[in-house]
Length: 192
Image 1: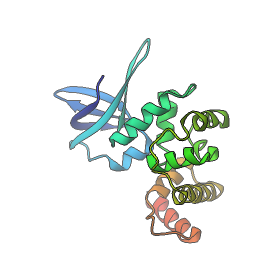
Image 2 (image 1 turned 90 degrees about the horizontal axis):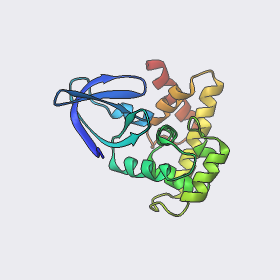
Image 3 (image 1 turned 90 degrees about the vertical axis):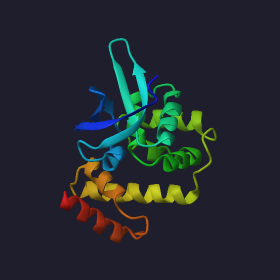
């Protein structure tokens, strides 16, 4: 098992990076949440990794934090959740927010991930509820619900869902009113 990689960031693509380790380029799939944390090309990077062995491929999935890797591995224990689906779930929100959503039974917050339908989200809640570290609180769930409301508002204005999620992730937690958060999100989207 390859637990982590340290090397030079050689390339960035839409859903993966290439990490050069002693002259060998490793293709590592990342979640959307990892991209803002990446260094510039040519700089040193360290990722925690999960090696997925399939019949015709070996795939590496990378995480900025060890907690994300541990949560990813827990998701893989749920029937019907594969590595790509688990990576999509991690791309929706931070681990503590996802744990809070699972512990609170908030299925709708999990379905924000690409490829995760209501039945799969319900299965995740059923199998993992109460089995994850108790870091979730009611405030965390409220923040996630507010983010979901803001995301839906941006999508209804005609913005891409992924762009909306990236913009929301960059808004300070100090900004609490929906109107203010919407303004900030629009500023972030229009800058890119």
